[in-house]
Amino acid sequence: MSHEREVAPPGLRRVLQDVVHALEEEAVATLAAWLDIPVPSGLWGRDLPEWINEQLQRLPDPKVFDLLEHALTSNGMWGSSAYDERVNKILKEAEIALVMVDGSFLEDDEGAEELDVQDATVRPLTLLTGKYATARSNWAKALTAQKAGDDRQAVALAVNTLEGVVKIASGQKDINSGLRRLFPEGERTPLCQAINQLHNYGSAMPWVRHGGGQKDVELTRIEALGVVRAAAVWIVMLINLDKEGRF
Image 1 (cartoon, rainbow, N blue to C red):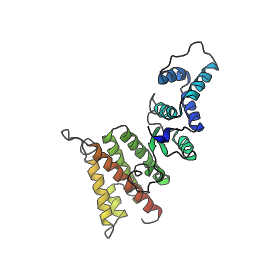
Image 2: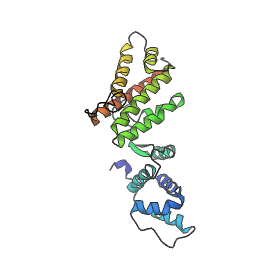
Image 3: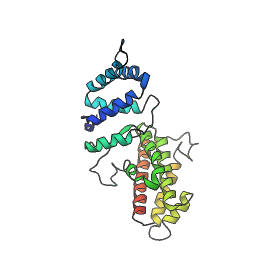
């Protein structure tokens, strides 16, 4: 267990209460199942929400993190980002080095350099705003897929996000034209080639996009993680160059 989950700020427990109460008539039975305790009998009216709050107040701090993550990634709520902003504000105020992405907690090493490999996959989430906001969902889903062990989906979404950022930055309809617009012939041509090669390499991986027919080839997790991290670095660089007016 991450040491970042040892102390749950009060606000996080309140979020968990709201999530459980949002289940309405299924709240009591669902919470009882999650906690592996009997469903209470003889409770009516205000007794029901009071019972829910009592059970949640008893939870050890680490269990608050675990149950909130489970609640947001199950029971038909998988991939929901409805609570991300609220939770991330609480985590930041409490100086807890975690970030919530589509209901899942990810490590957020605040001490890492901007392009440090450990921080690379989370960093794009803070930059994919404004005109780049449409690409944020794909990146969040890529991280969720990676955490769930779905490497093929993670790579596909990562290269899709990279392609989207290039097209947004350049105003072009495809990645090749976009890269040529962003990095015309000259000293930065190698950047154009490097980004294009990563995009093509990731797209051609087994069962990703163009490599779907390679049934006899396995996609290794280390290789997939490398592509996702590399895509993150290029995404950060492209957006920062755009902000500095370099395009």
